[in-house]
Length: 278
Image (cartoon, rainbow, N blue to C red; front, top):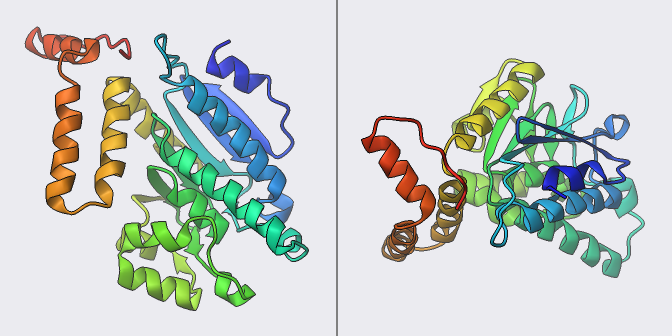
């Protein structure tokens, strides 16, 4: 079974999945609670992302039937308004530890998928919603989007990666302010701070832009895109010299691969390359 076939066979209650033109769109479908990340939502997201991790580009016969992922929320009000507070209130410390462990692992899986992942933020992306978006490669926002880490207002702190990833996006000074105050920011301010790549007029424009980004990436060598994604992430936490060494090693590893040979030949011959993902 292809990755797309395995996804179609899943039993889902909180997600809608749509695979078209090798783009998987994941829609969180709990609009009545602003798409809050309950344990069930996290479990279903882990199932989906687990299938992608195990299938795309893996092994000697890689499956590239999905070339990118868009994550969004149902309805115009929210991407994900946060974790499920009503459920969290009843958790013991042991249950909370399992909850955050699974959510953190999910965000790490998203971050390390070999294909581009775009968060299409339509409305609130607060708490766990902001953390889910930050695990994606690109964040796009509609004009009505709002971002924030308001956990301190609940007597909590970010627990799904916000303390780590927010400073990677906006820098330590802005991250400290937002985390310590719980202040909510608009899509325009999020774009100015570097959290958001682009602000679009409405949800339709948002999803069209997300698909356009993935479609453009899908015209490139899938193994080169995967290598570039790994290299950017690996170099991120290192000083310049160490980061350059990581980049050099990854660059050299591309030489002699079928996709590299095809891409360079196509350039010289002035034709469109036919990549096989090898």
